[in-house]
Image (cartoon, rainbow, N blue to C red; front, side, top):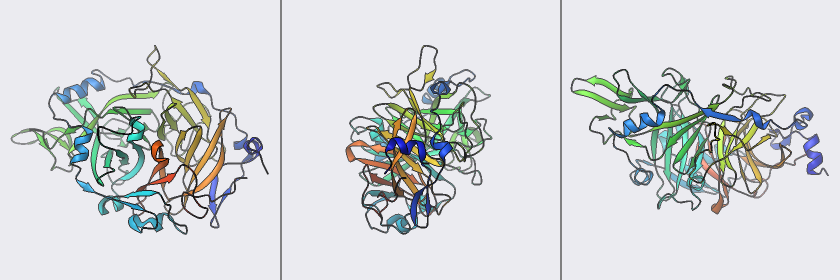
Length: 446
């Protein structure tokens, strides 16, 4: 029987589904890879023309009404449902084929959001990430990011605010603020590149930390939003929520100029932007640097150790990296005297195709895709030693499982599945349930 030390040197931790079982694929070179370089993980403020993003948002604040998170949850306009166990709600059997549905909870979107091809969910975070007491006022909320695929449009990113007590949820559109040629504060969709004509930012991971929402910017770094600046376009004197094809401040009516939002009632503008100090990461999907400039494919938080970023890589000869970044008591990333943010720890991932990663009490949890919209995913557990993560346990997970978040008091790992018709938020216990169930053991690590 292998010890963990021998396992780290001899096994590949890229786990794949074959013939109804989970097996460990052999990759000695990857298993013996060296630890990442901490010096590769440095963020700096993006170089942007004046005024700053925060100043632009302040100018929007002077002309648009805003609403807090609690009030947004209280008047949320869409109805979902919670399901547990063997319930057929959310088409659980299609996302968990051939296995017993886990005992954990899952949140079902309404029929439109569950099947739409216009938006795809990616990131998940909860109030347990945001606050030590796991409450936002009197509310407990789960947030999910969605991006608009290129073939559906360029509306950018929206965030679903789910009230866990009522099953109600509300979409909020993320926007990028700027000052137009007439000197008026306005905004556009969040895209990459951010020039008004790029494709929607993928938003592969999100973290709610204090008042701040961190959103992964795959090739560049981290976008920052602020929960204190969510603007209510419907309540604005010159707000337009009827025009589905327009965003920002525009002159489209004979009776004046209007703020539009692709039909969404609420918009949340970006307040800060931290980018790789050494430049952009590779733009090719799935391609990562072995060393050097990192990708920001997903995000999570370890409340004891800071913000976590990681790389989704499909390279067959090397695996991606995860890094931890310091946060202060208010939820802000900690900057050094030169204004830069430096990672405090990095690890080499033990597998490719990792869609999300988080850590809690010294254990790493990794979400590994199963391939397309039919391959069953896996929830891996791993330990860290000398800059390398080594898989210690593998569990079944739903098709299309993405970003991860831990809710400590509930002793649950939360994730979201992305594919239309197989789409929901669901939980797994921190420890495995019975073999043959989703969230349960399914592999012999060797």
